[in-house]
Length: 248
Image (cartoon, rainbow, N blue to C red):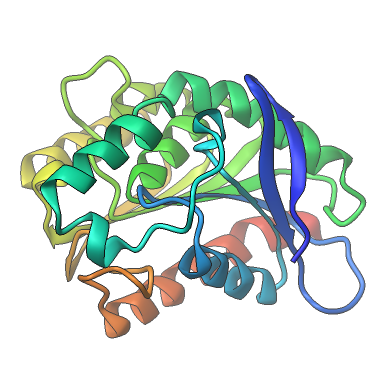
């Protein structure tokens, strides 16, 4: 598995481009990782999405913090001290503003890569990446045609970087799947996001899965295999209906 380096906003960003077997080019997708960071479980998601006919770029959003070992969520997120150290060392430097500056480089990479078809891009994210995916859709509306967010938090809160504030700028088709148990994306935020997207005329769907925050990656303590398959049953048709239709 070859590691690429993309000249991102604050230095070289390790990244991986996953492609299907056979001849390309294929529609391009950016996958924004979840809070634990780059590890086998996230590569698995990127590879499975690629196998459905996409060139999937998986960047390491924690590159500013330097190299780090694969994180075991079952250890880090059940120990308060380790969790806080992880948040301060790796997650805190990856602010939405910084990741959006990086995203300009990710989009340029996809536009220039011979494996990637011309045309609009899709973005998908998990946990913190689910929030970033929505922000990206509002930051780069002319490049991003479809966005999916799974168990993202803070999607419609009171912070200046809340994604719902960007709803008037979004041109993409939007799909959001929240967890039934998630204090960071509760019913009030779901209603607020739904209202913002509706008022802005965004083609969207907001759903709640009977799962806990972080249910998709296979190494998470709350991984739910049935609801992870539910996620695939929504993600692939969503992207197919936008990116592959536009490629015809």
